[in-house]
Length: 206
Image 1 (tube, rainbow, N blue to C red):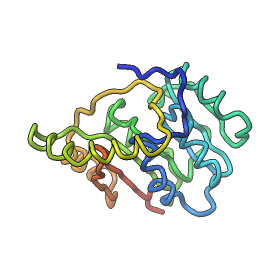
Image 2 (cartoon, rainbow, N blue to C red):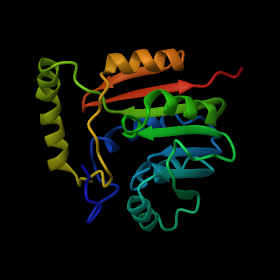
Image 3 (cartoon, rainbow, N blue to C red):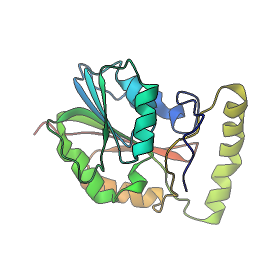
């Protein structure tokens, strides 16, 4: 399923943008280079550019990248790249890598392994992801609270569609925690209200 990119307020509210501040809090001081994987319309890339010397914003959808470039005119610190993350080669390591609502589009283990290799020692991986409900009862319970909160935000502020291909997640949070924990020791994983989870991992210095 694809969310149209026409008439998009890229910096409005949506379920992903709601958690941008949480991810920005994890950006290390003195960040020189950042990579935003699956950048979509460039909303987070523009925000992280205020804290990083240079941002590579990557997405495999050409139409989305074109829209992001148009929306980001004047953002000289951002380089938008039309590439598939899994086959793309970076020239230098990064101080922070962000992956927002993109990990469930990628081969989970291989994508995390690649992200880890692209970080410098001491660099930070920040993930905002989607997870599948473990049962119909669980789906109903989290929607009972999530939908009213989502509706409140939608009627009280300008909103933004995702503007990029969307896909339902296939992994539960327990599966994500188990897989990520084996790959990224000491990663911090938190469940969030609006059908999202966050993963923060600092690459060891050695």
